[in-house]
View 1 (tube, each protein chain N blue to C red):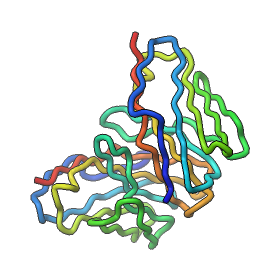
View 2 (view 1 turned 180 degrees about the vertical axis):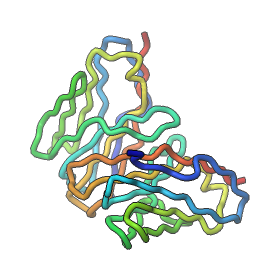
View 3 (view 1 turned 90 degrees about the vertical axis):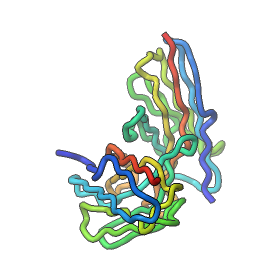
View 4 (view 1 turned 45 degrees about the horizontal axis):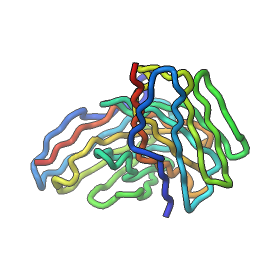
Length: 113
Length: 113
């Protein structure tokens, strides 16, 4: 069955540093991969999407990479701020069951001032 | 434009009672999803629908039923609630095009006592 692993449940970093979150998947070949942010008590909000034929995608301080050989995506937040503290979820999608959308457990990022 | 709206926001049920959670979207999306989120377990897909009149099982479908009689609504039913179904439930919707994001509702906090 499809399996998605996000490197750690929690990541603590100092303000101004770069946060790097990892998403690994097994047993399927997604056509694209999405990253979402979830704040406590709220639904996830979409951040970035990267296609299988794209190596890297950027949006402001966010950067996502997608390595289909390693079956891995890295999510970077540069110059991190306390406001970036949240749980980040990855969702490799497409390439399999039509419409199926499954998420990793998420990584809780805490940025300390 | 309301997006995705879940009703109710909170509910307390007694074991064995039944209830229906309503998800409504006004974006004309084909795909709709129901998830549950528990501490340490992340978002787990219960059921999903790829169009009006269709439903499919997700990762944790047992104990739940769904219906998609109208394109804009996706209902999640609990026929005989159990304490193990205490959770926060999220609904989401998206377009059929693969490289599009999902939009989430604000969540329903359900407690079964």
